Length: 308
Image (cartoon, rainbow, N blue to C red):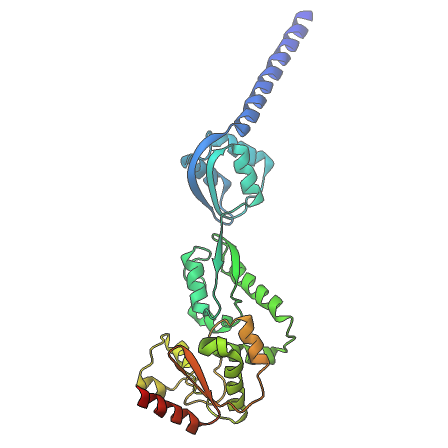
């Protein structure tokens, strides 16, 4: 009986010692750092952990992938989707921490004032924030004007909904100061986009011309809206006869949508036009000249022609 007890105790000690060694090896494995060349790993939503761990092993981010697999099997740790960058001295523990906390690769993107929705989407696609074709062209008119031009931090592979939502939320925050009603906001955005594209540096006067023409039911006669519709800045004579709601030479009133995402300054000008009699303006050598009537504009053009 004594012999059996001694054997059992000895067996227990051996098992405990063995488990202790395994545990120590396991802990040592998780904290042992290895040199990793710069590697990017894409984690897709709902991707199997086994597939991710295999890729981490294949790319040299971890050794002994099975050890990490056992950890995830027991801990059932959630992994956040995104693009992860690993480099330098790194341990499996560091890898787990990064995946668990969702420390994905980010990029800073600046969208200039006056950028169009199409240009915004293209920039997000080129920088791999969203997948190509994730936002169809038919959606652009609904986004135009509401993507606030600013600098943003995006996750690589963030996705279309989150990326666009981030820009619209910023827009909503900036608009609070104005207290626009929905219809008023829409009209001011359209006018602001025209100001932005025509001459934001002379925004107050451009706003005055637009508001005066709208009151008198005159066509706005602005090239920028037609350029937007055609997707080019060089207009041909035949373009001015095109039947499109963006042809403000043929159609009265405002175009159906904003023609860009305007600056805060342009929105301020659209909402606070000076009271005056300006009705015409033209650009020449980088400067904008304003007139109260068509006769004065033509007289200025003739004078300029004689000098040249």
